[in-house]
Image 1 (cartoon, one colour):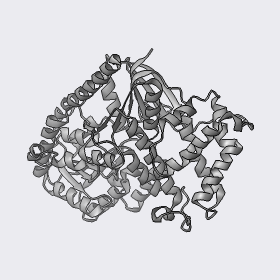
Image 2 (cartoon, one colour):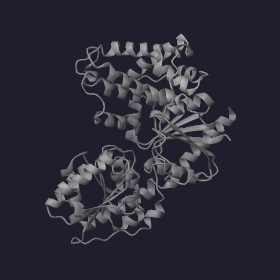
Image 3 (cartoon, helix red, strand yellow):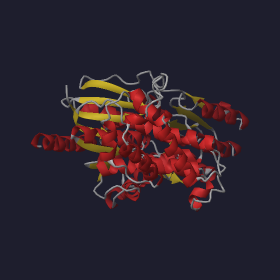
Image 4 (tube, one colour):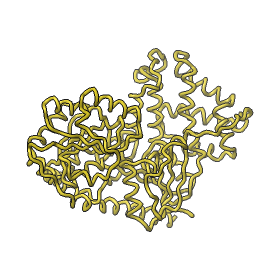
Length: 502
């Protein structure tokens, strides 16, 4: 059965909890009359296999694809003739387009998609053929000129190309609208799907994909960092060709998705500016996240006396992008000044086991063990009434549900100045700002300013209650769930009608 909407989801719903997954659930629940397909895109088939969400009845089918799963068979050694010379030339030009972060030509990709070969043969064309080997060598000599080891280059070359080629062989379910929850691999697959099936293509970007990948790439230890002598590279590329290459690759994917999209949605104004800088058109529409206001406004706001324990809540997964270590350094400052507090860390710990271990060891070093409780996944509505403040120490965010939920419950927030945090806590429009602040923003990775803002709330519980009330009013006015789902209903109806007219 042909779906109305196919949601293309990269590493999120229904196997991973988080902001994007919550947004997906909201859409599915709000539109029971829309027939959805889910196309889940993951790294390997054995990763994230436990369902975290029950699929509702309006999800008529779920498909899974894994970009790092390759055929486990002996290679077809005589594969050079499976592609024409023109197709080999297109594959070679593809390497240069990626390095220059150009939008990829969907027509060119379509000619490769339509090659009537098995997946194994198709992948072997790139991985094992003499022609593909010559393309790799030419690229290496052109851009590195033997000033970096060929073996390291070749593995990087494969890791860049094989997942992209894998996308071309994914069986795409038929739908009238393809809606990707990010750019990257999911956005690229959405572009391919819309081209194949002559369907509308929408993108809702929560966090900026290219920005998050840049953070991961430049903080990575697995990408080689020894290419300071590469003669053919500009200054940005001289420092690290491999990291530059990866950044350009993801930027190329994003630009390809932007070019193919019929409509792009952003959560907030600063995101839109970043998207345009990365190559998106300026016709982006703003649709923020939203929450079911009543579920949170009915919660009682805590009344704390100055001698009560100061309850701090962190709600989110324990991962490096959340920068828990800065939060721990912040608490070390509070502890050194003998403040009476307790931190509840509420969220999954199964994403980055090594980082979780580092945080736990850091807690031991700082002697904070008796001040911190890891609760794991909990119903945050049961904890919000006992919290005096919610903290967010991330180095990258979109429009965090955690701020909306905390403010809707009347709990002030101290958050890093990333994503939409400032406009959520201080207001977006002039009318919004008149409501007053509902928390504080602080610089990224800055324990001292973070601690200073927490101390304001610690020593002034009445003030904390007042700004908590401002948060409730802001969420009720601008971020109620029905405003968000109604906006997407109108968008879906418009593009579904357009496909019927076509």
